[in-house]
Amino acid sequence: MDLICSFELYMFNTGDTFYQCVIEHQKIPQNKKLRFIGLHMTGKSDLDVTFVEFRDCNCPKVPQGLTKTFPNLKVLSICNSKLKDISKDDMAEYKN
Image (cartoon, rainbow, N blue to C red; front, side, top):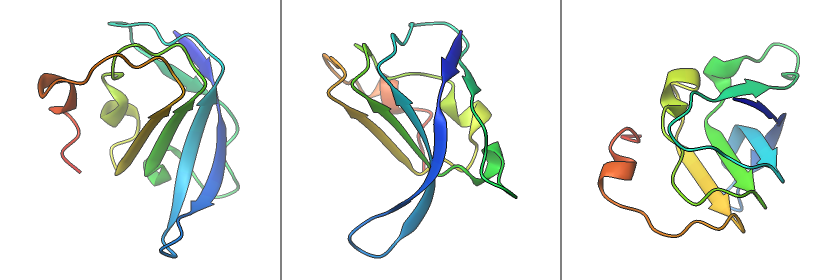
């Protein structure tokens, strides 16, 4: 399934800066391969993404397979997205 996203820099209040992929207002299917469609900033690629944010989406489960697209992922944010529960198994791939 294709997800339309934007790529941008995000700075935490600690001063740490992350290159992030933002997905807004979309239904996130379970058990389907996700493909992220959006324009990267100049000189950046999927390898530079360290932060993925699902914002105001319909995302009842933690998306799986994100680290295949974004192998350097360190931060996953799912906010205002109807997330119902998180299990230990849901987080198995997110070792960073």
